[in-house]
Length: 291
Image 1 (cartoon, rainbow, N blue to C red):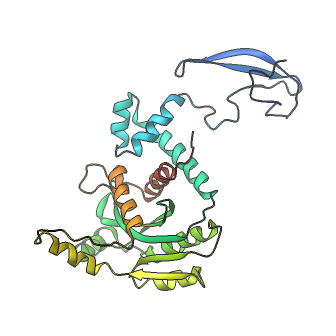
Image 2 (cartoon, rainbow, N blue to C red):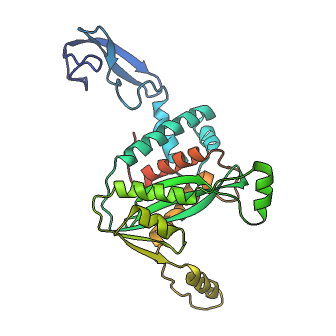
Image 3 (tube, rainbow, N blue to C red):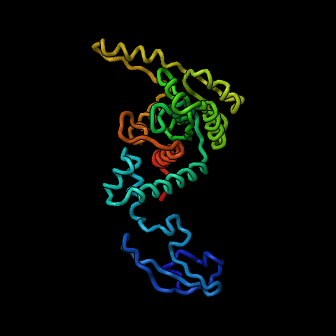
């Protein structure tokens, strides 16, 4: 028995330390020979890929490429055409990568000094079914969490949406509370400052989760008025944005996730898939090691 070429020191099935080498098998996609072993106690066969995250996957060579494509503004169909595989392959890889990214993120512990949170809007196949995306970012531009929920249509689309799809529950406050609870459970220290815009519904949501944390709200109305004046001035004014880390990450999400791009052929069909796509980008933004 030789353990030099095997990463296992015992059988992954019965945990016995008595096993012998049983040849190799060839992976034509990665073009590598993978050692196979046979346990003397339970008589089961295992290899160096047993119990690995990519166990039973045939196209392991596509994992990294699909991960980078989906986090760089490409849709699933564009990714499939570029890599020469089927749409189903990309879809199954997306589910596996995003669920793994979510598990890794939920196990992280952060130590933030300032936390920014707000909501951005998207749609579920049509503008008559809008979605809210609650997002939290710290001062180091790390995304601390995200939640996706349903909200009713507003403005001139409200009556049309009600007539075509019926009543639509407003999950905005619920998702913000869930996001803040997640952020609280992943923070190492309670000494941080919470910042957001001046939405009135945020105050009771914050106080329901955080009792003594410092909470600051900022109004964006003044910044918008200053930006309107810039095009009439020869010298541009430097406008201070108190929520810049959050707004900058929201802008990157709009650019790097095809589902969030406005005026695009690609639309999101399911709210849970949008949340998975966001967690996949969280893994890239926070430099998690997925593969």
